[in-house]
Amino acid sequence: MDNSKQDLLNELRESLTTLYDKYNNGKRNGALIFIEELDGYLRIGIELNFDQSQISFMNSDYSLIDIHSNNINSTNVRLMDGEIRSLKDIEEDSPEYVFLTEILKKAEKRKSK
Image (cartoon, rainbow, N blue to C red; front, side, top):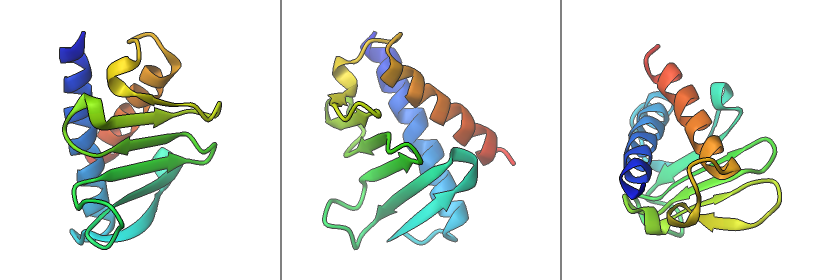
């Protein structure tokens, strides 16, 4: 099961980074960018108070994806209930996992345009 989570994380990281670069002309300056297709805000950058490789995404209902590295242990998901869960602890049929796969599908669709 962890392999599928790692694959999901790798694909999500790649797709969100590609979208960010496309919307921000390749600049990783910490700008918060609204991505209409994802209905949320995406941020990557060097001027943030966290490491350069961190990716944060929050949609309009305040559900959050926080990717600190390419490791399922340091990737967190928060849905509307407010509880933060690590990717390593969520089940593949959980609402958090479904949220991540939906964001990935939308990001992949947008990335291919």
